[in-house]
Length: 408
Ligand SMILES: O=C(O)CCC(=O)C(=O)O
Ligand SMILES: [Fe+2]
Image 1: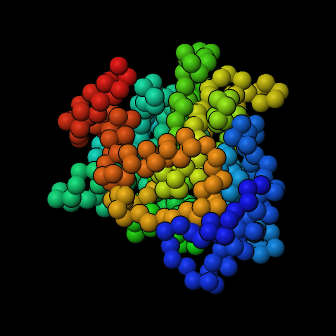
Image 2: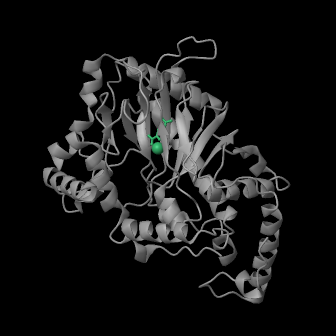
Image 3: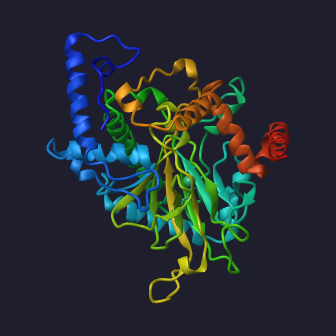
């Protein structure tokens, strides 16, 4: 256990009076006590399980924050059991989500993503690319309902805009169900952001500066059909290729019992993250990693479509896999000069690996030098090239040239 000098009790860059220094010292001692229970390493072999109900009582909250900090630093993924989004909202979303995929193709293509300059709507099987390879999945992208930017605003602000909703007559109640779910997870995400701040010994509102008001969050409804042939992840079909999420936090609802989601530990091994009852899988995006100087780690993950993931333990077919991630967004206009998050030294010191810190700094510079919206805009264009071709052909051409230079 590291021993901290009196100086390091003081949050660097901030001026503190005696009382708050004492307070910081107490918090540090609490932290050290909590750290004695640390259980995960960067070579984790399972995904931590946290219980949200522990946050509701002052007697159990410190233990929760301890586990949360451990998961943030060492794993970047965790299950959150008993989340405050009611089970009924989750099951109704799953019901309506599955119904949406059952619509005939002609109804789905009415809201095809290519119609939307805001990257929202339906993507047919195989329309998305991750790590230069096609993903074997079909999906609908929805978001917090917000108006399109005006033509005078910077082009990248088009990552925000209105949804394309399915025909209400074809799927009555879908919009209401989805908007209700977005509202509930939005509130939960705001609450959880405060817990992240507390786990880093920051004031609960310290991370709120990352968000706009209103803030657009995204939700994807994803269907992974069983690929037509056996495959492995290197040469065959990928559900979604290895990637890190780009936003703040992702709250993933695994809608069916399939295995397939895999998380890469820092030793390179792929760790399975199968569905756990009454939980979300929560993971950290690059924006949160960068904003915390690498303390919170954004971890690579993928979805594997091995045939054994599509059968239960008795060998019965499970049908397609469905999964519904909610991506907590950040303010697209956020840039380095607008960010003032000072992580206490005793927390920064928990990350021993200097490479992690310098990578996080590089990500921070790349993401926030202009504004985060610019980078996100280009990433969307390269992931959804049909949308790029239709609405932003010049940006797409430039981005593809950049990718080729990078690959070459
Ligand atoms: O389908 C899943 O379980 C994960 C999907 C995912 O990682 C993503 O869409 O970013
Ligand atoms: Fe992801």
